[in-house]
Amino acid sequence: MFKQGVLPFRYECEQTESGITALAGLPAYLELAIVPGLTDSIQRHLGECAKKEQGRTDTQIVMSLVLLNIAGGDSVDDLRILEKDEGLVKVVRQLGFSGHPRKERREQERRWRKERKRAFPSPSVVFRYLTSFVNPAEETKRARGHAFISAANERLQALRRVNPDLLRFAQRKSPQTEATLEMDASIVETTKQDTLFSYQGSPSFQPLSVRWAELDLVAHSEFRDGNVPAGYQNLRVFHEGPGGITERGAESLL
Image (cartoon, rainbow, N blue to C red; front, side, top):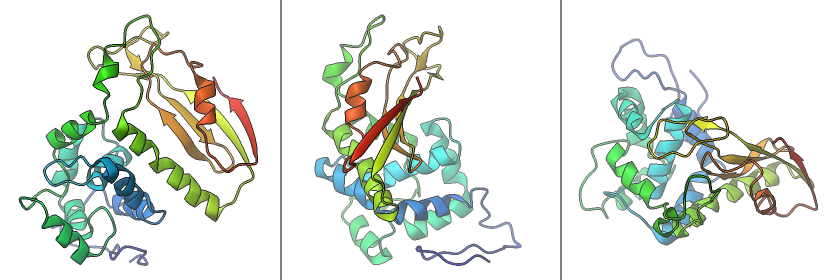
């Protein structure tokens, strides 16, 4: 048996097969997200431009995707695998995704038009939710042979404000006076239709990530098409790094 942490659950050995899960580590990551205030940050920023899907809050959907990625999911459809895990579903139904008291969660659920039966949102709900981060007016500007980064709409701008909250939490726990920012664009091959080609000749995406070396944390991340050069508009990205630092250096990994 393991010591109980912040959330009201604990791990122990079970001899029966009922309620067994192959994903027992995921609730620990959920607890890790709650301690620095990630779940509250998601709801606070995205709640300002609320987009509800069948009674699901922003925190529920975003944290479902976070847990899916940690579990090694390849696509949104893999949420069905999490939903079929009896033990994991039992824990999630009991705890929720926010860490708020059960009474508060029940009061929130009563605001919606019907009771939910699923612990995780369905793939169709998540697909509709993700489209709210797309800027339709910018999509027509994307073309082969032309490097382009879509301007963020209001929803995406709100989501971008979540990560700085985590950086501020880390800075409070481990104060830094210097930030070495490592910038790296990674080629991710895909079979998705209409994907643009990278310089390696394969249909890909080429997201850019900025790592804060002293804290070993991601300071910024930007989705990019595969045909966008690794060094494209990196000065802009550099200036969008962590604030409140008295010295700033950059080590490029491109």
